[in-house]
Length: 474
Image 1 (cartoon, rainbow, N blue to C red):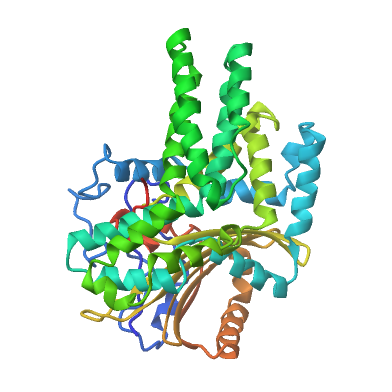
Image 2 (image 1 turned 180 degrees about the vertical axis):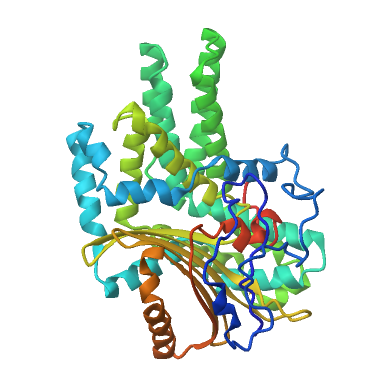
């Protein structure tokens, strides 16, 4: 297995553009039986060549007027999530408490920190649930669809699969979309005259609670009565303010909500059966079988949804409203923006964050995972799992781990805080023991001090190349 822990020059201005400063380069002289060990003094492009002056700072082929260009631009404009979250977790959300925030949110902060207290054994389960929630398109069905996408020779088949995925994505988000729709209607009412608001409330009260069976009726009520009612209101009042933006958001969510109707998903699946390649993998399965299977899925549970995440989002919302003081609002807005960018359809790697209190020690960690990384060997079709893990332990310091796993073998690079320089040999020996205990062969290991964090864009250049991404937008 060739070592592929080399990093590449990130796109300038992504917010991750700092290159890697590594100390102790003498570790590279160790006999590691590796073809291309990490060179701590050199940052290279994805194709292994140095940047030329004409290309430095610019990744060709990215149009900043496109949706993908906007995604890259958003990455550039975002501060590092770990810096803000670490401050909040280590401080126990002190800025919120000291600001005199409401009792309800203060209680949620206390409950959140109780949920985050765990032992190393509980941490493993917590991480597993987080990884499960990072990708809702998982399981045998989607493994099969990925295989068919690789085998597909026609644009029509690929388009059909993407149409199915879009509808499935909207269906699995149905409960969340309906909540957003109801919340938007309440907010719209705040900008209306009293009599008109009462009329809207009567219509909104007709919306049934979430269920797959109620989708069609709710969608018809929204399209046939509620949205036309709002259209007549705008026409009569000439209100060109915030309410128009809210109505646009309402129509978008309504479109997605209707798109996720179970019958629509089943019909998209049935259309795929017209392709022999698809039929070969799903022979004997009907749209009725699919409807029965999906009708029994608990999408909240399948997405790894946990109470702590709901608590955190509620606290973030309070901060965005300014309940923690105007001076702290920007920090909460930045965290929310970072979460939204990480959910982008252009993000081809899984990303999870792990705020925990491990045996009494606060820790914030982020994990980036590519479960389908190329091996790095020229002409090889072998693939493995590539991980970048960042974690900050209170009173200990910040760590970077970059790993590649393939067929029981592991390559690993770890950056530790300079305060632990005297313990480097212990760190190295401890890692080897952990690998051995888990029956993993450690082919390559570099343990170094790290003054700068490894940029995500450098570890995963495919983020900026749109490889392996699936666009599930409507």
